[in-house]
Amino acid sequence: MARLQIFLAALWWGSLTTVGFMVVPMLFMHMETPAIAGQMAGKLFSAQTWLAVACGILLLLAAKRQNLSQAHAPSPWVIAGMLLALLIELAVKPHIMARDNLALWHNLGSAFYVLQWVCAGKVLWALSPMKPEPAIAADSAQTD
Image 1 (cartoon, rainbow, N blue to C red):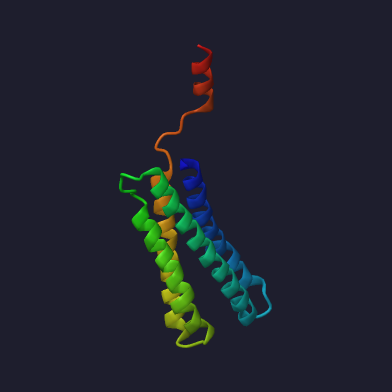
Image 2 (cartoon, rainbow, N blue to C red; image 1 turned 45 degrees about the vertical axis):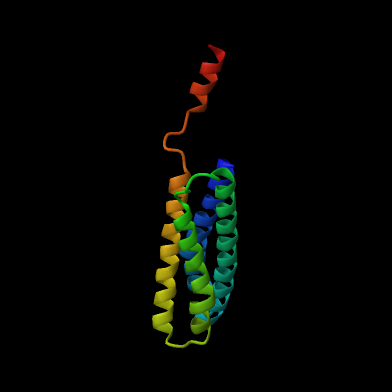
């Protein structure tokens, strides 16, 4: 179950990193017009939102199954990240698509995205093992 949680957190954080910090900026550099790039970026961010929500729900379910009697440390970060993703999709994106005070809503959406990235990173950090055991050491211990 711990590997699944690490995988989900890595998928969430890695997809946020790839889409927000690499793919979308490249769209604006290489597409014919900013309007076309913006339309495509909106679709990518929507897909990212639903991936974030799915990863968050699965992380919460896995944590509940694994730690029935304990509080799970990453859960506040998971919930905050999911809420930020949904805020971007349901509250910020409609204003950006309507070009309603674009600078304000774009900056707010960007801030929420970075905060969601931080939340996903905190979840991944909390779930990652402190000190990985080298495979060589484990093999030599078994042969002794």
